[in-house]
Image: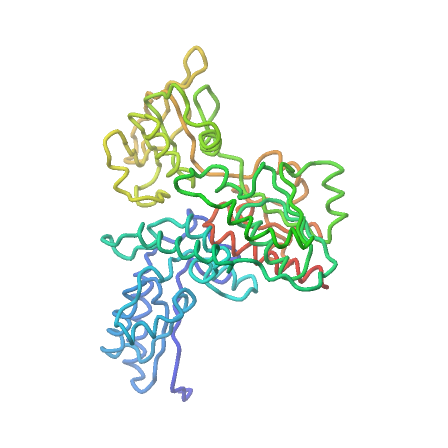
Length: 489
């Protein structure tokens, strides 16, 4: 009726609806499989073609299929459902994919989109869209080491660990060959920015601000740069970050554009007020260091505390045998592996949901080994303590059929890995700012990263509740862009 000869059909996943400023928390994601979205899109296209046969249809949304995208897309064209296929996220991660298809007839699985969501965050915050996993040499080494292997595999028989290792090797080669140094402008802008927190988000923001010509003071509460990954992730899974950060940041330090302050946590009182007055803008990228806990007792550890103790001082001695790990947050994988290696037997992993929903960064077959008991649909309620105040059991409520009675699982040690939240001390320091119901810092309506305090911004886990490292990197860059616009106004 409109005389259109070509139409593009877009049917998005409900998790990507336009009113969402930041990636949804895991519990908020709609229960719809991406294949259902693709099926709905193809069904819509087929209906349109049947009603208006002469129209040419173009659609996209095939990136989730990874290396199988060409097969499904070609099939849709062959049966007449579509006439043209658009490439979205895969074009960012794998820009020469069409050439590889023409020349070799297949895609390289190691270069396909891994669904981290960082490109979408960059777009939402006005930055140029690009793939932080595959095409950003400066931060690729960090992203490669911390992206779960499962994100690299598109079928069960594929060696995801090998594909991730190839990505890490490429990122390391970029560092060793001098490809990651930031490009500093000849003249500085005269603006000073404070970045609080030297994890993935804070480092990404620092690099972006330096490249925009600003001077940055980087504050880190710990005695080393790197944030949570450097402080708690075991060395056999995460290494080389200090050498990488030195290569990345040293040119700016020598040029007088960057000053790093270690063991400098955010303080209350006059010092915080001085910061807000002294700097043209402040970015809070502290991450989340508070952990959800069911109570205290001897032998009860929070996940981050246990992993940091292990990395600095080694295993606990003597190691209790019966250990319960409360699953639900990012620290579960590393805690489980380290506890098992230290001698926990049995190691009970308690998770209130289904197995497939639990955050796990390794081969799922690890959970099936002797000595490991994964108890799903098990909601921990609290602890029982002996006369000396040492934990002796975990009270559990089964989440199966209605009427199941709670019971006590006898254990000698508990590690809590149920998720993170803003530390009470930091929350008190930020009194006057709004927080969401689940404990994240809420942003002002005037900007995606601007708080209600003029010139004070926040990004990373502090506002997203804990996301992939690539997503935090993207938010750091988005916040840097917003700060740049603010200080230039």
